[in-house]
Image (cartoon, rainbow, N blue to C red; front, side, top):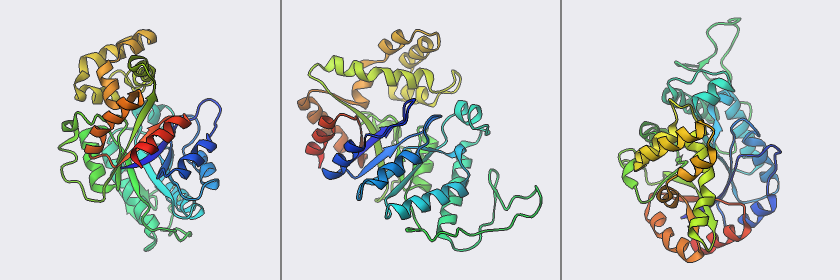
Length: 332
């Protein structure tokens, strides 16, 4: 099992813990990942990291499809891959309707079909076999309209690698299945190695080289209950605040894990402004299954379930140097 470092989203002021990233690279971490929502973008911090490292792979976890056209992504990916000497891992995701329509002003329906077209276009552009012509339901090149002066074009940059690995952030069974068909890897946002049946059908035809890189919050603490409580706020935020009341993919996933009633209660409390109560209502068992929390001995023991799962890379969700080093000692 490989290790990655998940840096996640930026706060109100963008900052990158570059010393921690350098330490992770030094002790053998395979990759480092950034994220975006509607704050700092996903690529700029990654470029900052790439300029100050030499070996560790650079992952977007995830880049939002609606933020950029396929051509923009192909250009950006080819450029970063060259400058980093072939280290880019392109993680993509559709986000949700609140962000897609509220922030980017794009239409959200048919996300699977849009993703399929997006990936196909990016791959074709990076392969540079010829000028690109593509007329799909969601993307149209050259545009059939406007000034009627558009012409098929070919990427000027000769990519360092014609096949840059594409990972898909996905939660729904159909979307995860799509990832196994068109992508090189899957980025689960929450995963329980104790409930592998949740994704059994979606993952039943995995290719031997297919990667599953899963973000896992790791909290070292002598008191297990306190450690689990420390992880509850961000889980409550995803269940209650990261999605509309009528369409919340995170809430749906927690329901498939067997906590539907509890998740709905968390959402109700969160949306009514009772955030402290919402956090307290997050099921302790759920938190324990999707994180690694407690003393070193307990985490060491619970790593066994992750090693037996289909996950190929654990993306350590921590910016504590002691946690980053401990995970390396246990898995590398």
